[in-house]
Image (cartoon, rainbow, N blue to C red; front, side, top):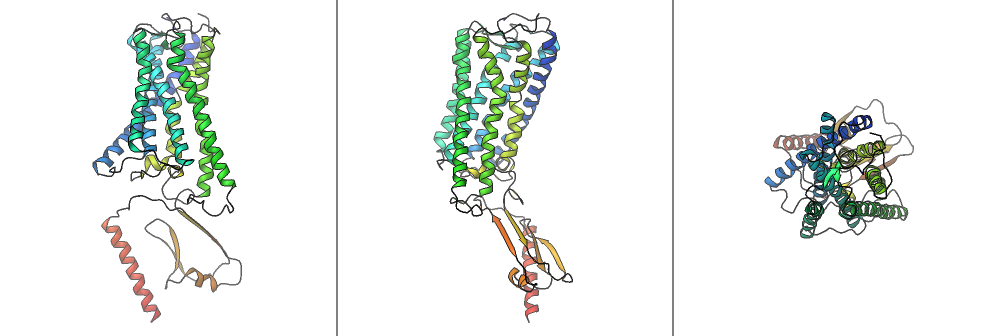
Length: 415
């Protein structure tokens, strides 16, 4: 069978042509990779949410962004399952219509692709509402919206099956809706895919424009924004607003465009569907990597993220660090006495502080005793609201003993 054979054929393909035997390897590989990574993250988040709920740490509700990511990962699992099933076609060297594998392949393509697009758009809209409008969606409306989105996704798939229980047949390189149901393909699936794609791109453009305009309107870039956010975090978040839609469009558009071209009568070759299938089957593992990196604070924080952290507070790699969250101090000036003994000590927040050995003198006193020169100090502090950290008794005892010892030593020195 020619490599240019296209979507119009809906019968069993036995054996697989050479282009599919090679091309479906990439589709199956990225499908399995997305399935494994998505299931791993979904299991991890489920465990964390259950533990937090059992400990009573979710009395005010879970963070809404975290729940949206949780639902997106669930959608990615279904999408990844669809393309991971192409490994069965490779092992059997055929795509057999009428089998459970073929039907499940078509069902998960319908639900997974649409659910992934819907929740990516939901995250974009929620980000817009929090960052631009500065508001938080009520819990009842939020949970009701998630339920409605899942009902919508499955309703689209159920309507197709209701029209014809055997609607899923071979549609080129894998199984999906029969070519005879072009209108159903459009209105039950690809119309909404393109709406999600267009809405996601436009929404992130608006957010990017808002953040950029806000940064340019500031009189002093070294001072925090009016709402207390770090200018560096604002610029970093603006870059993320470009990454999210680009990844989604690059992964989704090739297959959507190919299907739409096939609906107009254009013969789409197998190699294109293998390329497009490898791209869209990568959505799962790319989402895991993307949100684990850009929303690391939400996903991997030891404590549940506060429900009120919805805007730029949700972007970050870690809770405390020298270049992302927390406090960073840079001091430059003349060198002190090289004979003076100093020690490097870390406080309970993990910050390195340098102090005189015998007395707790202030920084002003220390610098005043140095030769004349220029001293500059720059401190960036980010204050985030959240639950009070409970330290272990041993840690608190060490801190109290250390503080008491230094007070006693300072008192004896003054005498």
